[in-house]
Length: 370
Ligand code: OSB
Ligand code: MG
Image (cartoon, rainbow, N blue to C red):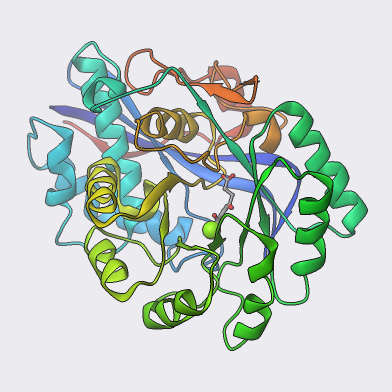
């Protein structure tokens, strides 16, 4: 893959409604598109999903831009790789910065598939055409508002609800959903909010939740292990899982029974596939999470989650659940509670140039062959 040009396009999409979590509120999603053009004119696109604040994990869109420009672009343009599965090894001398790495690595997958005249799906061992999906619901100001919101999603056909919780804002809203929508799969995500408040978690154990995601602090793997021994409700880790080695660690410590896998949080598709295999080997459930992706990252996620191993509906909702508008020509649409997996070339979506002008800045050139 001979690279001619690499550009970054900073975009912002306004959210339909603010997304409130245990750590903050999001009203608009900033993201960058990394556009890689090969010598033959083929274009691959990856999405940088990191947030502006270091509150979900430590990486931010600003730190990632720096690492992409200063470290990753020189690496990927300084070698002529024959396959995108070699990008993660090429980046291995850069510690962490998984979202930066993923933005470039996934663009290389899109590029390679397009050059090969196929879909990225063709590199996965299995693929389904449609997949059942869920919604991650932020904290709502009142229980009535929450129930109205969940009712809408249930009516649209979403099969699973994940509610953001924190101490003092957990049992009442969860019990209300459980009671009003007994058929919905229900789980909760604490984003680490229960440090030193295990009793509040134990009080949720009788709600029959499918799982509770990241209840304790990032890196508290023994704490999660001790907690899991006291709870019937399966624990799921999100923020804590950054690389394949983490799977053996959490399995050995009994820290959780499920993994919320996000391709960008682990540095890209190659590492994500290793994690899928490690989860299977260690008997952990694996499902696909989200980062409020635009149509580019969403298409990539849909393709990845179409693999047979992903049986649990992911945080993969239709574009209109997040945004008024999207930057691709084929935004994800919900039909009968399912999303259709894009199967065109690469990630199977095309940028809408007019939307890019509306929601994006001028492309910034990070590399150009002389
Ligand atoms: O903790 O899973 C999370 C969104 C942004 C950052 C972290 C998380 C989330 C979500 C929503 O829960 C996922 C989505 O629907 O894209
Ligand atoms: Mg989470």
